Amino acid sequence: MALSDNDIAPYAEEMERLKENSLYSAQAYFEAAKFSEAASRLFVFLPALVSAVAGAIIATGGAKVWGVASAVSGAVAATASYLGSDRKSASYRASARRYTGLRHKLAFEIRILAHKETISDVEEVTRALAAEYQGCVAADDPVPNFLYEKARKRINSNIV
Image 1 (cartoon, rainbow, N blue to C red):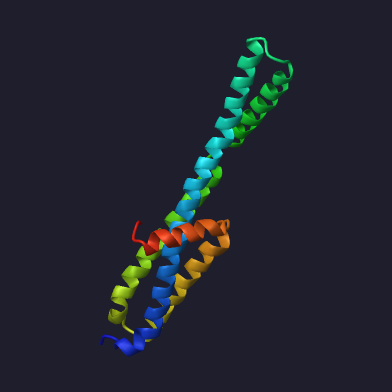
Image 2: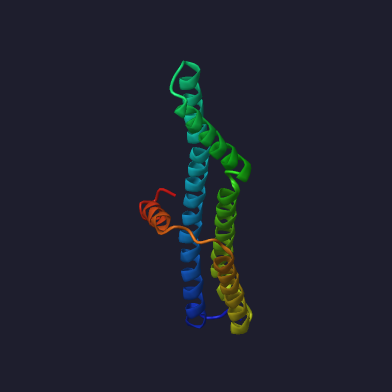
């Protein structure tokens, strides 16, 4: 026997809430991945550019102080390159994918809730998906607030 809409309503509402939270979290983490990638590239590129310009100034007879700028900029670029510019970005992207996967699971489970055998089955699925969401939240590095705001604007204007 299929469960009634009244029986599953509180569980469906909770799953819808988790699905919406997953949507916003996924988009925020995708925004963070893009931002982190761009910032990391700048941390490698700009010091390397300063080093190259300072080296060219010295080579054409400029002041020796440019040698210090060249050396420091080169060291910063080398350090940024060594530390890896994609680590944080990859972590954010993996988080976004986890939230996206969870959102798809939630959408599927919401569609089949009424076909579960018992209300206990519905509750079990709801609790498992809520625990999965909480696991994602607990494991992920936080995203800066301005990126959540950017994600919210994209979602609300149907750009995603």
